[in-house]
Length: 136
Ligand SMILES: [Zn+2]
Image (cartoon, rainbow, N blue to C red):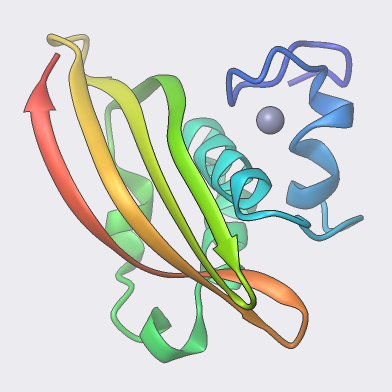
């Protein structure tokens, strides 16, 4: 992805001013909304360093349950992200979002998730999510 391309997270902003600084550890997301966007971008870009980013933004309390295979999602093409609702209260954040994808060029699927986040040592991390998968 080039710096001036519009970001893969569907924000409409250039990559260099959106998720790129987070994915390259030049900055930490200040809001849970930014964290969700950057994690979606990591899934969508899907290289080894992006999988590392997903692991690094996982809360230590739940990270032991993460399986590398879940982060690869072979054949998945992520096609869109919509943040339905995002709230922050102190060090706790909640985000409801919809991400669309297709597998091996099949019909579009919707991954709907209500995620919880915790700010740990000043950095927002993904804690857990309640997921619903459906056909688009
Ligand atoms: Zn972005």
